Length: 68
Image 1 (cartoon, rainbow, N blue to C red):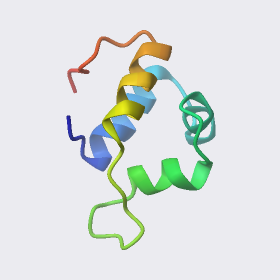
Image 2 (image 1 turned 120 degrees about the vertical axis):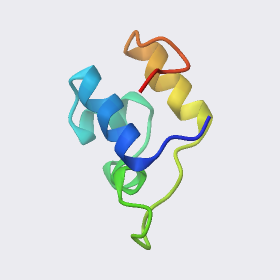
Image 3 (image 1 turned 60 degrees about the vertical axis):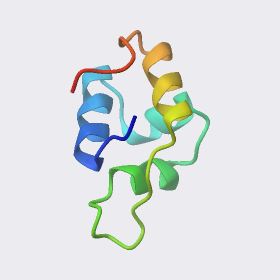
Image 4 (image 1 turned 60 degrees about the horizontal axis):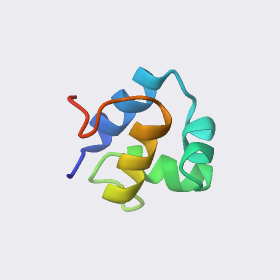
């Protein structure tokens, strides 16, 4: 499953978490989470791995795959 940066941001907000809290939830640094939410044209933007999406959903009781 591939999520856009905007979808990742909506998923995080749905869970009611800050970027710092979301990063801790899936065991990544704040900067990594920020890069997942960066617009795709940003040179620092990265794609969120599917395993991290699934872990985030499980830990936040969001059905997987998420409907965004």
